[in-house]
Amino acid sequence: MRYAGNGASLVVAEGSVRAGPEDGISSLSASQARLHILAADDLRELQSFDLDLASDPRTLGIMDMQVSPSGDRIAVALSPIDFSIGFGNGASCQAFQGSEARVYDLGTGRELWKAPFENARIGGLGWAPDGSSLAVTLQTGPGEDPVAQAFCPERKVDHNLLILDSASGRVLSGLSTGDVAGPICLGPRHEVFTAPYHFFYTKIADEKAKVWNSQTGAVERTIACPGRDVHDVLALSRDASLLVGYVGKERFDFSWRTMQDLPENLDERFAVWDARSGNLLHVSPSFVPLTRPAGKRPAQKPDLGWLPPALRKLSDRIMRVQSAPGKPQVQVAADGSKVLVSWPWRGSPLLFDLPK
Image: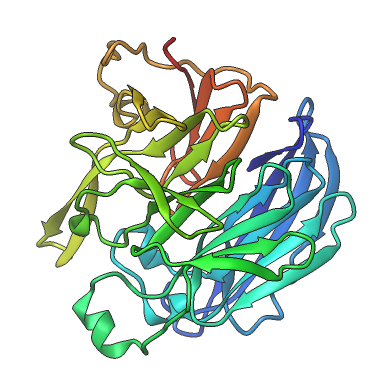
């Protein structure tokens, strides 16, 4: 779900997937996806259109979608559905068998253009503040899984971060981030904010957000959270003054009953930085106690000076969001006063007031 334009409408993605003859999650045969544009005040449907995925021989799903700053277009990232990614178990070879970035007119539902990426899956999308360009990150391999490295075909791209012309999809520039590229935000003065994405919880080591110059391809600065890794999720306020990133901690436990590694979230937190200086401003309390089932939640107490957030009516100030499968989605208010955290499959949305 995304706010569109000034917050007067919402874009909601609806999708389904059908299992293949073997009737298992590893044998998916078809998928469907549809976008609904709803009035934010009463959820009245204003527009609805199908992405026509059923006719594609690949089993594609929406990995990310971002509404343009003016609210007239939406960029959609389509990549092969791979359930193993969401459970932290790496990725299958099929996960990298072609992706597409598409841009649609939100008023008519007409597809304006699409850009295929044959040897990669899309890690994230981000609009330029003026809507003139669209950034795309590409992922080309299943992490550091030795089995996947041995049996998956080698896939390469010249650059894993591309800046596209938003009117045509033409590549304007590209660079290599040196990591598994994930979320991306475009700021003013040719700034590009990125953070790594990891397929394996056990392979995290000193991850930071990077700020690039899209014209020179150079890293201008890094943004870190002491004692924590920055990964998988980034959000930038409209005025590019605040950057929000995911800094949760995870680990693997081995289940002898199922004979497989099971990921566990030790805590889920976001950090807030001054986007211009990189100074760390806030680290949120953990979401984990707040998202456990009713009756199993511990008593909510102040954490690091924060009070537990309460659910409220969402305002029209919620802006851009970058997220990764299986991670919380984070949206930051245009004035930088609030952060909205939500999950595709679990928990209730949480709205945090940022400490002043």
